[in-house]
Length: 323
Image (cartoon, rainbow, N blue to C red; front, side, top):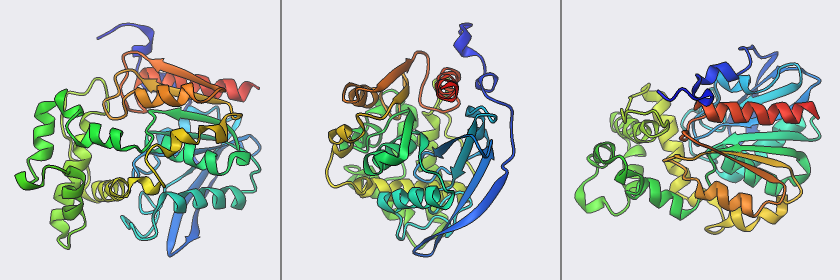
């Protein structure tokens, strides 16, 4: 193991575990109800945490990237996942529904302006939200940037990442008939949305397993099978968004609209060896964003739990809290 300081366990960089001071289920419309929690200082700097996936849900560890004496931390499970209901539903579940939900949460909590903190798909959603509601955003802190482009989807679901992990890629594609292997997202979509629940869960575990196996730089490539219901929500929602190109108007939209947030201070934390979201996306938005600082973390992959990534994210939030 590399003995350099950034190879400490990630938990050593985080604040101690805390419990929320507020939990609620918020009706956001179209029959959806989302789980929302608040922790830290009720009078502190508000920060909203946007989890990955889509469909990943928030977790208690996500509370620990913020000094609880200085920040009012808001976490929520996006439509269809985690504790939000209806579970694994893709009906009325689009990027623009999520953007509206974020605004509803902000208004419901009486927050004028907040820090937006998101990783992976959460970084995608953070950028889209900020480009749509720039006046509500004080700072952006992003990790493992994904810009919802066809090139990124082709990399991860078209064999690019598979060239580095051929044995894991073989397991992912083995479930797809040879005559459907021109589009693995579409092929998985047919099974994830079949009427056969056992088939849904089988393909959901394979879809989730492929991504999880490549998340960490220290991964051994094991496709760990998580709980079936979690995998089902994660895979269905993620696939639904990818089949629909993130519900954006055109490919490359996020990068093309970076001028909308040119005035917002930002920090981008990116693993140098991120197999899921390669560094080129983080680099491109940093070039187009005058007030952004790019932190390229050596010896790191994609996961939030990578020690070097956790350290940089905590440092970024500590700097914001010190102002």
